[in-house]
Length: 283
Image (tube, rainbow, N blue to C red; front, side, top):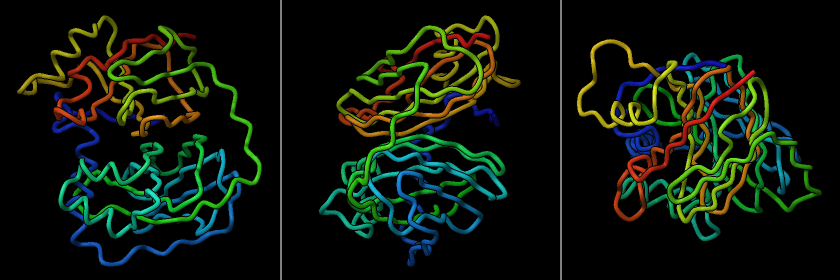
């Protein structure tokens, strides 16, 4: 699995960066990129390159296995969302111009991944009937890739994949096993809180404690040299009440699950409110 390091304090928070990219792009984007592909049923392939995200125009609803793939030159973060029934894509993007965080109330967030070329990422999620969007964010400034698609009525549910761990995201804590096996596996991820949540998986060097990691994340200045941790995976954000079955592949080591999203009322980062959980990955 590909990984990348981030500066201490994660400057402005992972998801706020995504929102800022979309906010800056709203005024620039006059046309929606074309969709393409065939009806996917309970198997949905979403592919991206440097210029477009390709999604079938019409898919069957219900529990759907989503595969994200990319041929873009740089990593992309691709997320899915369903527009509320009374909201158009244009209204959603206009709302982002005015209040990026407030516009989250106009959609149901369904999750997503960081995707690099040549590496597929897969998760299963329920697609309710209605208009959805796939949004791709790059590592550099510029407009995101945005493609809408329609989900129809369910045509028979896909049986959820067998999971080895349940991860429940609450306000504000992760309820999950203290130890999970190494290698490819599926986590059942649920948001039972009252607002949006995500997880960012950070691998720490041997001996790094949760308290030490928190001190470094909250530091106003970056220390000299590389930090003793790296971000190795990400999923989300997902809205309250949503659930997904997420593909995970981790090497043995010491890890932390963190939510960096802002609290809806105070704007305080969820991690500042205690949403961080240490766990081990074994052989």
